[in-house]
Length: 368
Ligand code: ATP
Image (cartoon, rainbow, N blue to C red; front, side, top):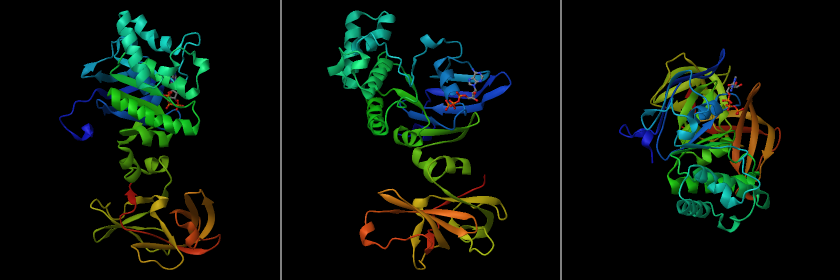
């Protein structure tokens, strides 16, 4: 499933050079983006970057100052929110406290004058989909937070929208329930085939549920890609730093056989990278590598890249340990080890002199 790589695939949503201004302030800046049918698309970014504004424009609650938004190839600019085949589920769920689960789910269907027997069928289908059959007669205060979240989802999907917008849908759940619910959400999305667009602050959540993730910054897209590409091949230090943990070293590019070198520090060996897209010699750049790709050892290892350092800090997290190692004055590198064999292996302690090493393909070089 990768319609974004298929030139013949038709997007369900197209943002075409969309700009949204509130007075002098530009919340969305000339943004162009395609989302494909059946995608689970995540919008991720720091507070104020424009995620909600983008969603609200899809829902029809805001209109672009410039540019167009197309749904199935048709400009939806003039279509009012209630006539769009789009539904929005808010973090607060906004369930009616005096109505049963059944009636909450049926509410929107009744308002659209759907025949009674059809409403019954649809509600039963939604109850089954969200595994709420047992709770149909209960009121919202008689079910758990996770169940309420599923009622809200069932209600949003009842009208079979083409597109469901989810604004921090799991924000009210605790971490464990949140993780379980992420998988339920993915199952439901797959079963219904509805295109989901989710706004979340939680990068783990975006990485778990999404087919693709858009990282936003200041009203623009920093990178749009699959979760593994965002993690493994970030296109900027901003994205590398925003997702997960990363070590960054500033340096200068130099030509090298099979790839390039990054020169950094005063007396450090250059970092060697195998790549078919080396930066021009002399270019200012950053080398970025994830902590779990950095090995730590007590004796000189055989590897393409080796630096010496001193352990400053150790964070033991159960399954993994993260070592903070000073590799040059003021330059701290993180190295992560998995603890599956921890008891039988030599571990390190504060102020140990160690070697950090990594292969020539373990990191990326970024020009911005
Ligand atoms: P958060 O994660 O905090 O919800 P967000 O990425 O969803 O943030 P938006 O709500 O889209 O951000 O807001 C983007 C920017 O536009 C913010 O700086 C916000 O202050 C501004 N903004 C949003 N709505 C309005 C409005 N109606 N009038 C003026 N400014 C607005």
